[in-house]
Structure formats: C-alpha cells, structure tokens
Image 1 (tube, one colour):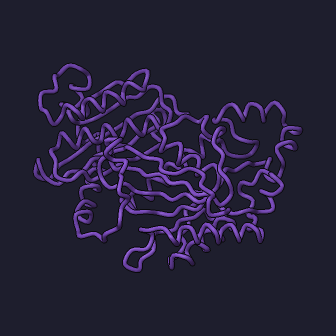
Image 2 (cartoon, helix red, strand yellow; image 1 turned 90 degrees about the horizontal axis):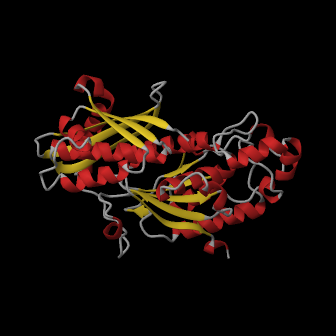
Length: 369
C-alpha cells in the first residue's frame, strides 16, 4: 500500500472545443518513481473538460494504489481553484466533472491542490498529447463487434469504449495437485491440465467477438510454461498467436517456492502469519503482494495503451488475476485472501477510458463440468 502519492494531471484540446485528451501520472513524492500512468482520448471537448478528465483519472489511480493522502499538481488554474473551493463552478458542463472529482477526493484523508507552470507538468502534458494523437486512429472506421444487449454503462455512468479483459487461469500442474507454492517455478501442465486448457479454449472459441473479420483477439500470457501451454490451446482455437508479457507472471514466493503451506508454516511460523495479514511483506527472498499489484497495474496500463477499446485474452496466475479483479472492483487488498479462483477458470473485467470499470464474471468453470 502506498500511503502518500503525488498526482500530476493535464488535459488539452486542439481547437477548444476540438479533439481532446488527458494524461495523469502518479508518483512517489520522495523518490519520483512513477507508480501509475493514465491517458485517454475524450473526443470533441474543451481544454477544461479534458483537464478535469486528467484529474479524475489521476485520483482514481491514486485510490487503486491505496493512498490516503494526495498532492495534486496541475497547470490549470481553473481546476485547482475550483477543487480548492476558492472559485465557483458556473459552467453546466463542468459541474458534474467537479462533483465526480470531489467524490473521488473524499476517499482520501487529505488532498492538496497546487498550481504549477506548464513547463513543470511535462509528463502529464506528454501523455495528454499522446492520447490526442491516438484519437486520430480512434476516429477511423472500426470493425463491428456485436455487443451485449444490455451494457453496464447505463447503470454505472461509465463512458467510452471499454477494454475487455478475459482472464484465464492456467490449467493443472503437479504443483497445484500437491498444493505447493508455485510462483516462478516453471512447471508444465499435467495431462488433466491440458484437458482443462482445451476446455477453456473451446469455451472461448465459441464466444462472440473474439474473432472479427478473421482476426483473433490478442492473446497475452505470462512467460511461464503452464500459462504458455494454456494460451496456445486458446490461440489454436481462435486462430491467433500468443504474446508474452512479464508483468503477468505469478508472485515470486522466494524460499517458499515448492513448499506446502504447512511446510512453510513449520519453517517460518511467525513470519508466515505476518505475511498473511500484511500485503506489504514479501516472502523470504520473494515478492510482496503489494509489489505484484503495482507490477500488474503497470502491465494493465501498458496493454490498454496498446490495445485500448478491444477485447483481450490474458492467461495468467491466481495473484495477477485477483489483482486485476481488485482493480475492477476498486477493492482493498483483503480481496486477495477472500476470493477463490479455480484452475482454468474464466473471469471478465472491463476498464473504461474515464477510469470506471465493470467486473462481468468471476471464476466461471462451467466449461469444465
């Protein structure tokens, strides 16, 4: 969990109103480390609307990080003064954006707003310009994909075309049969695991929207063999190919790798108890769940930047999939210990360009029955 963060946000419009986009970056104020980036094209809008979009996206990202205090820096005098309560929000188009930003800000114990010169806001400004550049492609004719009759947009208020992630956990391995910590150990699927992967592939092969005009949806997997084998079964069913993203790899369990829960508890009883109650603690020589969350969030942002507005198949492991569902639910780290995910299960989450999200399915294993 990151207690205190710095949010830098910006927005721009080429025409005012004109093609508009926003950018936001969340940093560690002590080290300057980038913890999250957000950018999106918002269509035809004014500078002020885009700037509020950047602020909202930045606050949402800070909330995902679990921050309690936030320092916001923007080169928009209007947004800074309105959010600080010194200026009234008179324009009707700005009032709902101001209300949404204030609702997000209320989640934190403290939010401080500071105006800075544009030259000091170059990171967020660059992201906003990248979003506007990408908007040219977004406005080009797109392939038609049949959508569900009832969209969650009307109920959640989310806007824009979401990026839909179909989250598939890999099939059975010898380690999962014996219930051993299986993180970076590169173990293959068992024969039963291959059957599970084939069943998941058949399920996805029958889903609408995964193959459009002969082109399969992107299939991205963790680099480990168990996920690669599962992903390849899906790629064979869809006629696609498997890409690899290191951010989707499982937690590094360090010295507990290959041990059962009891063996690890017998070895490090007090440490394991602390590890189970504090997601900032890493296994000996391994990785904390907070570290996994930051890594997976970065991977999600990179994939959305590359494939925004499309449906993606992500083949991964328990912890990364839980992290993505946690982001979709805007939930705390306790979800990691309260959510069960079966082998070869399917979950679905959508992320919208305005920062909203919708979890559509969790741990579906109907294809395995």
